[in-house]
Image (tube, rainbow, N blue to C red; front, top):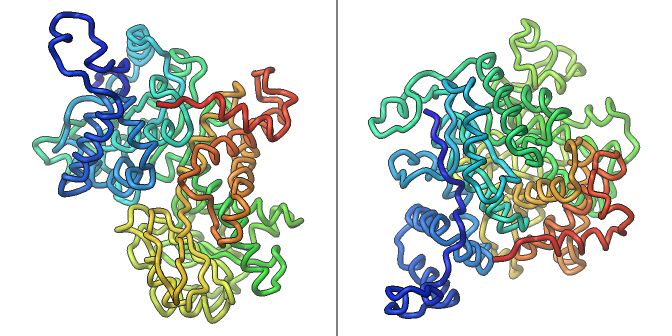
Length: 545
């Protein structure tokens, strides 16, 4: 299947009253403001979020200005509908509720035709794409291989680029690469619209990705390409293969790492203030050994290196647990060489031959100050483990990050109850505020929404030739420093989502400054600006509905 369809945002639709022909003059005038109120009321009348998601998708294609104005006015209410957690169900049911193409669907069978397909598509456009979000649908959120249904993720991420980062919607292009699926249930579904065969091997996928990255960069020379929800082995392989060659980044590895590092800056300082523990002495246990977990752990190492530790010393502050237990050098799969390559970096060699089979055993052994979950297993942080964390720490850091909420390791209400309200909490999906002992507690949300729009926007703004690891770390620092004094005083680990445009500008500015330091920027007009001047420039460049 190789369908070259229109980008998700067609030319803006003028109000009916603006039409000059006779038919238009016989229609009642309806203003943008009236349409916005009408849309808001209609959404409230719908019985569930999936129907709201579908209706908003129709509005986005018909009138993007209206769609993004609605997001602007109720971002905290609508972001969970247009993206996580609702987008997970939308991806699972993508073929069932399919309403027409939303971007580009490129088949591995058309690998050799990609240059002509993308060039022909470009020539139909008034605006050349500036941001591409591409997935192969192989690891959607915590839901697994959804094949062509992954398109919902690409579309959802680009919605947030516009709403949160100020990217012009006419420059956004969602793409799904159809390489088959190993999900037998999906392949057997009579309405499935993708290739009905097992997923391509990594070698075959790499050949296809080589062709895609080259063709996309040739057709759209200034584009930023974000990789999204590739399975772990492919995600790491593609990032290593393309990072220094194209203007690209992987949101699951680098975006997640950046946003969690930003939150950990705040949490570690609060925890150390409560306990007196030196910042460099924090210890972090991860439940999960996939691409996101390894990417987050590697990014969080920068916190410890900024405190003066060497890379090796920083690495030793992390313990990773996968489905076989703590990753150690004496484990059978490690000895036999069968362990996934991306996990090898965090193999522990100091356990004296002892194996630790589960989270509870590792917590008893390590006595960590921080617990991070990227396991995609609901409730994987049980009450005894959480109470143990509270026993070990005056302010335990617990980040259950798996998306959507149905995969989250720990609910916010349980975290408060089982730690006597002392937890420093951040999850991947949103949780409502909770009343605890007469005080309103707000859950931190370590959502990539805080950083990926700023990463992409900043790379575009400065004309970066590549997106380096240091630029990703700079984005995390920009995020942490974007909190206001009120937010810091309230104990928030992340800025309030209502300020996402200002936050994205701060993230973009920090990334641009780092790009300038490394000499990978090409926009001379931004050089020489102060940090505040860069933030103001980023805000001024944002698109508004």
